[in-house]
Length: 197
Image (cartoon, rainbow, N blue to C red; front, top):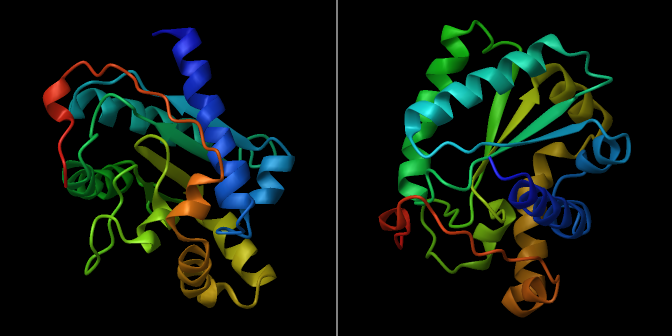
């Protein structure tokens, strides 16, 4: 595990969180946990699905056993595996099974972010896909209780998705590029994993 590389990955992720997720208000709940330093950033060195699953289960276990005041949510960043969005999307079924096997499906949930994220019915370069485009493949581990609490405090939570699409369409690709997000090109263990959607 390269500590310097991991630090750069976390810096790029925090910049994306601050300028895109919080800066564009794509998630009105993100600012509070960010300001309180309640987000755990975990960088996985996994290069196989099996190793990533092991890292995921470990991260889920830590989150479940740690008080919310200390860690409310975790970003599990995995830059060396599931770099193809279709493979990543398929892996989410494995994630759901892991939550069930660990008896955590009622306590935790996982949201998905990926550099090639694509909603059904869209083209790869459609700007609305950028609401879920992160610098690296990652899984966002959330406490269901925290999600419920945040939704109750935000009465228009059901409109967030549509509002985000409207925000991104107003911003456009040029506006997204102007956010100045760091793009770090990392050598992957298996270059064949770099595939177009």
